[in-house]
Length: 224
Image (tube, rainbow, N blue to C red; front, side):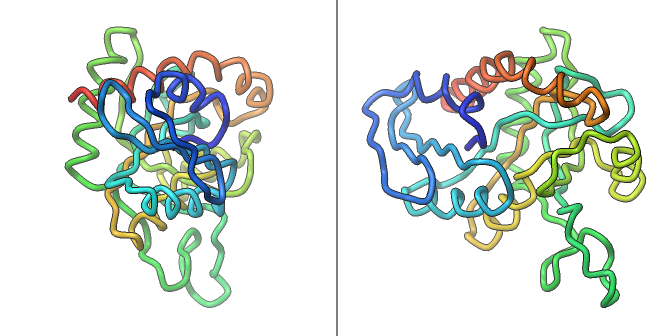
C-alpha cells in the first residue's frame, strides 16, 4: 500500500496479470516476480488508509506492507534515511478532557505494534538494500495525523511527547485497522524532509527517489 501516485506507480508498472478491483480506492491484483500480490493506492489521510486496508483484505491480502515517505522527527535522522515502525500513535487524537493521554483513541490501546515476523522480514530486507547506499535503517515510533507537519515547534512536541522517529498521515490508521482486521502489517517510511520550515520544498523533490526505493523493497519482499 502507498498513499500517493509516486509511492505506487513503479510497483504497478512491474505487475503482471493485472486485474482492477472495485473498492473505495485503486486496488489491483496481480503478480510481482511471479508472486500473487494486491496493490492499493489509498489516498492521503487516516480514513483512506483504513478503507484501503479493509479493501486489500477483501481482495485476498494476507499481510500489508505500507511504503512511502515521511518527515524526520528523531535527532540524527535525515533525508534519505528509513524508519520501520515498531510503535504507532495518532498524534492528533485528543481525549484529554476525559482523562486519556494525548494520542490515545478512546477504546483503543495506547499504541499499536506491527507483526514481529513481518517486521523482521521487512527490516532485514531494507538493511540489505539501504545500508550499502549509505542510508540509516532504524526501528522507531511513527506518529500519524491528518496534518502535514512543517513547523519546528510541532516537531519538537512530537519528539518530546511520543519519542517519535517519523511523522506522516496514514501509518497509525493502518495499524488500527489491520489490528481489527486481524492481518499482519508493517510500515516503511523513507524520510523525505525534516517536517520543519523546509518541508514544503523538500517533500516533492524527494518523491521520485523514494518511488524507486519502494519498488526495490517490494521486489525484495516477494523474492525472500
